[in-house]
Length: 384
Length: 231
Ligand SMILES: Nc1ncnc2c1ncn2[C@@H]1O[C@H](COP(=O)(O)OP(=O)(O)OP(=O)(O)O)[C@@H](O)[C@H]1O
Ligand SMILES: [Mg+2]
Image (cartoon, rainbow over all chains, first blue to last red; front, side):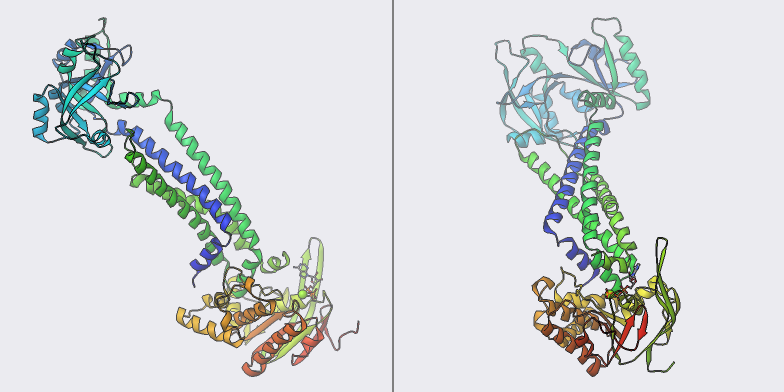
């Protein structure tokens, strides 16, 4: 028998109370892990954005098109290394309810500008050569069971072909992976030429441009030269660094960071009250026993530590179970047939969560621990 | 001080301050307890029996006076030192047993040994011996809630014994038990005194319990008196 055994026996003596406090802690940390993983996913667009990449949009808003002629004019500017243009295809595969992010691009410049997508050189070459070639992110491929060599139809909910069909046929030439674990691999890319020649309206227009500069230090210069180049034309542009664009895109959904922080804070506050209160009650019920332990010769600081250990155990067991459950949920979501982004509970989230668990454990245990520390033997016996 | 004297109280005063009121329980109390004694302390309610026992057990300190145990001063010890001193020297037996409800009998008995340097194996051996002594070896795995009052008190005696203290202090150890069970418990205490030479101080209201002791002191209003006042 050791002190830890006593702590454990005390912890487990009231099963219902243990269950409720563990459950409260469990839920709070599960929510915490899921929300922070989601937040980190949202921020990954900003974190993973290339410093030397700009986004050039129609100034009105990003759903308005730009003329394809802009591409070469931007490419001719000083400090610009490369330009790629992208069109939103509004794609889906079989089920109109399930959107697949699909974009029409110029493959050669796409591969130069977006070098975070990893695929064999031979497949890159095959894509450039094949007008109906499609590259598919690993997650999308896993979701739909696609293989290199498959020929698949994709529908658009925006465009139609000249003959009225809304579906295009593609050859899957590569399944790309990401340079980083959080790099998006749910998207599909195909030839702009194939799209432009077959679709029935808005020919010769592009959605937006990705621009690579020779140095992030020149970003501002390039931005102003692009935007002034097209000033007072029918299609004015608004350029910005990719990170700024991604951030603005996230913020369109609302101030998610604040919402997440408030939810997490509320959850933690609630368990602080629940667990803290239940610890105070538990220790008060044990007044006489603590008096007996002290009478036998257990020193007050040792009893203080045992009480703190008990609240720490609740926080750690409940919290770690919560983290495990969050991981399980993310795994199950990744196996389900919805194109969910890669949520990752990485080491930094786990470490932070464990830090919070320790703080919670200490905070919820400190009052009863001090009560136990101060408990006078004689009054402990007369109180019951 | 003779070598035979285990405990000596000299001019001990004890008072409690409650708000503005000051209750003096003992005023210049003197007392000696010899090694191997089995002393019963009797007296009316409020006469100071528990207060005396608390001081003897080192859970309460006198307001003034000198307390010497086994040749060393006790009244000058700090709270932390007193805790260690209690663990080494005193075994406590309470009226309401005061066992840990979540621990089985063996673990309850083992509790004081967590305050010693004994290894797990030695602790187990001592626990088994102590339980054997109170004839509860077959109940080692039972929790207090699964035992009768008498059995629980026997576990409590085993717990008080297991670290081999020099003095056993019992505050009405049979106050909650029926006659027959009480006699059983008192028999064990007597055996500990006669066979194992344990020094015992027992507070009791019960004259028949006092008969098991070697001598009886009567306390009244904080003073030892010759004979119990007949009530
Ligand atoms: N912690 C305390 N604070 C104030 N007064 C106390 C305290 N403990 C004891 N007293 C007072 O000291 C006196 C002696 O009390 P004590 O408990 O020692 O009596 P007792 O002989 O054990 O009585 P009983 O037979 O009822 O157990 C009583 O008047 C009691 O009110
Ligand atoms: Mg009393």
